[in-house]
Amino acid sequence: MLVLGDAHASDSDRRETLLAYYRAIDPDRVLQVGDLEHYDLPAPTWFVAGNNEDLNVIDALRAGEDPDGTRNVHLLASTAATIDGLRVGGLSGNHAPTKYDLSRAALSGDRRRHFTHEDVDRAAELSDIDVFLTHEAPTGLLWYGYDPGCEHVTDLLETVSPDLCLVGHHHQHRAAEIAGTRVVSLAPAWERYYTLDPETLQLTAHDRDSIE
Image (tube, rainbow, N blue to C red):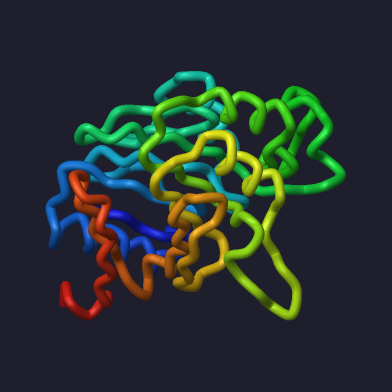
């Protein structure tokens, strides 16, 4: 299974790198952790929305629609899917403290990129999750002189208790055990890609140059 960090594929060079992975690896299934920004893909891809997306496309996918220009994209928005025998769930969006207590319906414009308490509450109801995808990091994973993680994501890990959590947004590889879950912040797709063994949940990093 191919696993990818942030793609930012609205940029043509980064979009070409993204698609090069699909051509070289020819995956049956793909997981991606947000800031995808390109929704016409060669293989079935399950992803969470990041803070940089076409939000009209994301809203349509949230509503269960298949908007024009999309192919093989499946949004995990406080939902789960069974993929190669794994139960994979996801929380879409990033955290904004001033918007968290609002309803999703109250968000407009580019504020639609955030998750709200409603999204977190729905995600907390997911069960039997093997792999959890989130764009926002939990606390205790990264350090910039301060902890950029979100306690709501940490609380979700304690509640949902997945075996593995894959994180985007921060564009660097870091790993830790948090609330009993193995958590990995993924490097961006223009630097490396990952493969995941569905049976063992072993995650292996590969340099981008390995496909060239």
